[in-house]
Image: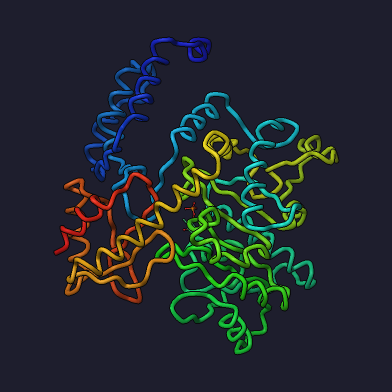
Length: 454
Ligand SMILES: *Cc1c(COP(=O)(O)O)cnc(C)c1O
């Protein structure tokens, strides 16, 4: 039996490859629908039995039932949360990574894969203006990156300040800092200093004022700047924050999970000035750098600090740490051990297409946001742009609508397969929001959606 499972089965290979070939050709990718639990349990019932099933039947069940109960994040009409739009090259190479069981745990085992991943990290570091010594690894997402980085911030400060392990510490954030940072702080036992801002942008002046007014004796050991808030795409005053961080010896973490890709877009690059001073930086290629799930780049200015915190100490791992100068173990730079070489799909796609194609595709999303704001102002008197778009998201309201109107409208829009646009909260009000990113989204699609709101 074991042997049969591991043997090449030409029929099954054809079945699956044919499916993948067809999926890669969907143009446009259909949005599909939310699932119904009862129906899904019905079709899955009895499938996992002792004897197995014909792969054609299982694949058909996946294609006809399961896949249609997953809203396609790579549809150009998916404009909620943060969508994804992997390049074909990246998708194809993701299959290669799977097919070759490609891991990227340690230099000893996977130097070839790690060298390629590090080449991408180098490219991103260079765009950010980080020093030659900067480095890190790919993790599963922004949440994993924020957690791994802020653990290093905590332990580095604890060591520097000679604090006991239970001592209180705080990290400064704004009201738009991503929920994953709040989660991280809960996990690592660090408290928040919530810095009041005007217009939701964290600035050096606001940070300085909050620290000056603060009377809590628990030391503030770091600050999180967001390079592209998830809701409105606001890039914090990174240069101002960096200056305060340098003066006061704060760890400066930049969360660019969504917006970090803007480093590759000339029209907005200046907004990121100051990022070169970051102690740690996260960007999700599975968002706006067109890589498949799940892929986040985590970069440290001084990777050796991360290594001191994250290296796992176990006698059977000693062989990984030979002291060879060249060795770079991605496992040493985050809380993980086993990891797939998830940076390689991006590496392949970057190598094939070149960085100019990326800049152009990212600019497309920025252009869609700008054009949508202009269109709303010019032609839709019932609609109102809430805030000028900074990156690729547009927050807007329908005059006269209450929360329930937005929810009903959003459901109808999806049911009619016109778009997936979920409402969001802004200053206590429910409003509508587009998150652009897919280069296949068109202004005709946007118009079609806006027309349903008048
Ligand atoms: C999406 C996002 C995250 C979380 O990233 P995941 O990849 O979903 O874990 C963190 N911060 C910001 C600003 C984000 O937009």
